[in-house]
Image (tube, rainbow, N blue to C red; front, side, top):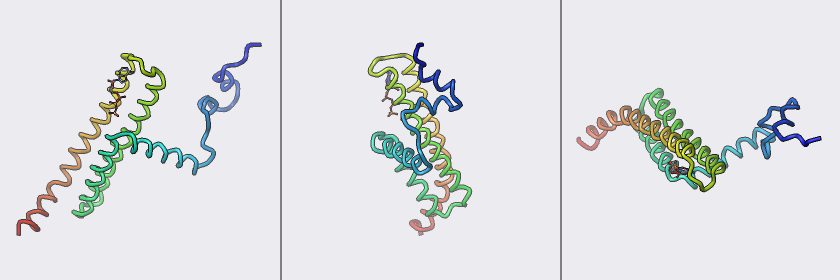
Amino acid sequence: MTPKLPIEQAQSTSSPIERELSWTVASSLFASFKYAAAGIGYAFTTQRNFRIHVVIGSLAIGLALFLHLEAVKVAIIVLTIGLVLALELLNTALESVVDLTVQQTFHPLAKIAKDCAAGAVMVSALSALAIASSLIFPPLFDWFQTTVGS
Ligand SMILES: Nc1ncnc2c1ncn2[C@@H]1O[C@H](COP(=O)(O)OP(=O)(O)OP(=O)(O)O)[C@@H](O)[C@H]1O
């Protein structure tokens, strides 16, 4: 009898396919958090853009708190920064999967995948910049006028 491929084995059991094909599975909620933290740590140490977004995002949140913006405005800024960072993480994940698939060979589909993922990060970053600027600059200008100008 021909040995079953992993995917056939998975289909013949009640376990979901992706669980069977995984090299390992997070054994607990704590382990899931540990793997997620490892991914964030990897992106922070290897991706310059991720570090830039963390620094700019922290500055924006710091300014929003310093200027005592309304809670809903701070929440909008946090949400947009979170979106940029999450997309940057997905971009990093996609880059790794593409590299794993095609290795060091040129493939037009690999180019499309990487370019589009990078484009998604750029769209979210520009939108976050526009939102944060429109919420932070007017009160920042007022603060300068009252404190520095007087
Ligand atoms: N295997 C490949 N085949 C075709 N084009 C590729 C391939 N690998 C990379 N490229 C091209 O080179 C560009 C840069 O690749 P890289 O892996 O640095 O991704 P990146 O999204 O620019 O990285 P980062 O987000 O870290 O700046 C891609 O956007 C793509 O246009």
